[in-house]
Image 1: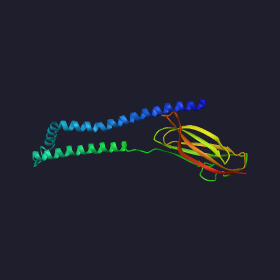
Image 2 (image 1 turned 45 degrees about the horizontal axis):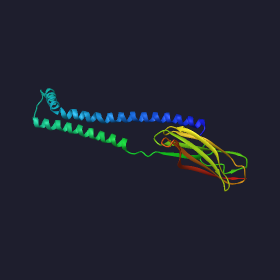
Image 3 (image 1 turned 90 degrees about the vertical axis):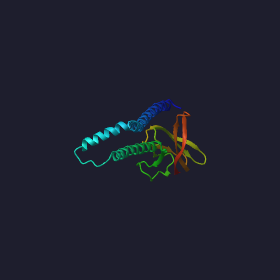
Image 4 (image 1 turned 90 degrees about the horizontal axis):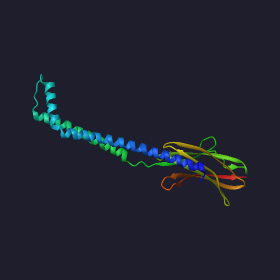
Length: 221
């Protein structure tokens, strides 16, 4: 690999390390948020006697001039109802946070072929021999993390198979990469411009084919 690609790989490793750090911080905040309601519930449960006494005193102070018809048993039922309601809220909150953050989110990458105006269709399917032709490729990253991509364009016919373009870029999550791809056909005939998408793997320290490709059939005269 060239020095520029090695530099890009080193840059990606730094960006990916920063991503992992931010992911750890967000998960830590989540666990703290999930733990706080549980701690509050334990405090309420373990001190329910003191809280019950405080509740009765407050209730009687607010209602000492009014007509009191409820018994202590009714007060107990009301206080227990409040505690049970708080427990349910804590459980619902904890379950909701757990589900939202443990549900598997399947990431994906997407690649589209565009014409020189940046839209779909009207591709250069009929070209002159020796003429420089161009298309654009749009890559979208929805993997949930930054990616280092490689685009490789190969011009194929029954005789030859040659690489005409290789491009590399680091794309953040939900980011886009629009790159021009140029090619020249030197002999008349039927050709296929195949454009393949690779991603860099930290585990293997190499680029791996994503099984995502697009292609253009070209007739050169």
